[in-house]
Amino acid sequence: MISNHCVQERVILPLGDILTGQSVSKYLRFLQKSRYWSREEIDRFQNERLRLLITHAYGHVPFYREEMDKLQLTPADIRTKEDLRLLPIVTKAMIKKEGIERFKAAGIPEKSIVQGTSSGSTGEPFRYLTTKDDYSVNIAANLRGWYDMGWRLGDRYVKLSQNPRNNPVKRLQDYMTNNLYLATNPLTDENFANVLRQIESYKPRVIRCYPDPLLLLARYKRVHPEFAWSPVAITTTGNTLFPETRKEIEEAWGCKVFDSYSCEGNSCVFECPTHTCYHSTEEYGISEVVDEQGNPVKKGVGRLVSTSLWNMAQPFIRYDTQDFVEVDDTPCECGREHLKIVRILGRDNDVLVMPSGRRFIVHNFTVFFQTDIPELKRSIDQFQVVKQKSGCVVFRLVVNENYDTEVGNYIIRFWQQEFGVPVTIELLAELPVLHNNKRHFIISE
Image 1 (cartoon, rainbow, N blue to C red):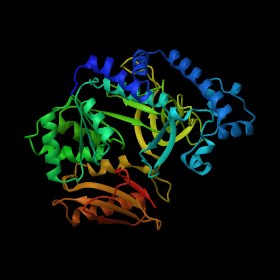
Image 2 (tube, helix red, strand yellow; image 1 turned 90 degrees about the horizontal axis):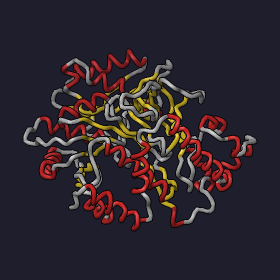
Image 3 (tube, one colour; image 1 turned 120 degrees about the vertical axis):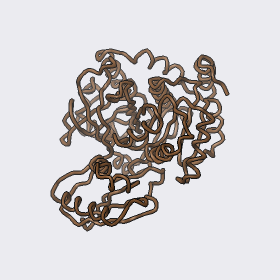
Image 4 (tube, rainbow, N blue to C red; image 1 turned 90 degrees about the vertical axis):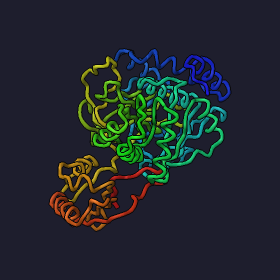
């Protein structure tokens, strides 16, 4: 294994760029320099890239040209990111309905195009096109986020996934980057012990995992003190990380969690080293936060809408990420002036809307199950809330030996009063997951 930082950054990474036709090394140097740009510098760069993107999309992408013509707009009308409001918001459903060919840019060499696939957090797996340049900026943005955790190219890390690593190219990449790839499936004590033994032996600087399986592994680790290794940091992605989950993981592993978020629309967000907020990688994409009427939100909760600044193969312009975030316009104590996101609240389908109009998000339920009532807190391992077509609500629960009918009756009484509809409980050995091993906490049928 190659562990020298300089060799990795100055030899291995550039060599990989030559072999793959990418430019990660170049963009990593750029992003390291732009880390502390002023707000004026960020805005100037975004507006320059945006003008290039709009001109390109109008000239080469059928969908955007037709939409702008309908609105009697030309590229000259979109000069700054504030002008983006003149354009409609594009959804994943629109892209699927129109067909990828309507969003594909003409004139892009096939050798420069990369097939991208979203992980399908919404239950809608999504294939799209990007370019090697865009892909390179994405990798460089992720590396900058990892550098903020105290990790550098060449340091050991462990990636935990629920699927085995079968791709030989990926296995070679793991070896070259000092990554130990481990499968958390099956979610059994025997496999948890095996995973922790390998982590203990490998001694990674960073561990990367979805929050759900990592929480189960953390609970196992907490009662098995023979597994004592603590990394410098843990990074989570894929699912919404809730405060209660973060607390349990940090206590079990003895280090801080750095959460992250990304999507196909070029939103790339990393937790600040101060752990007080997230920062958007604004050199990579424009992140708008809007209310239900489409008005900009400077402080408070809104829908995240993203515009790619580098994807010329299939531009995402004002793309609805289907995620809600909370933003704040006060300066960050770290000194950066990139967009400050206080919380990532999750998908729009992670909101339960009752007939009364009341809304409940996942956090309402995680707080409830982490209540100070001892019998409730220690008897529920996992939950999922399902609103049926009939209007009734079902709590799917994975419970342990501490659970009894009194706990179940308390859950039913409490939530029937909150919802105003009938509530039932379904006990399961394991909660169902999506095709990509992500789990929805809330389902509305």
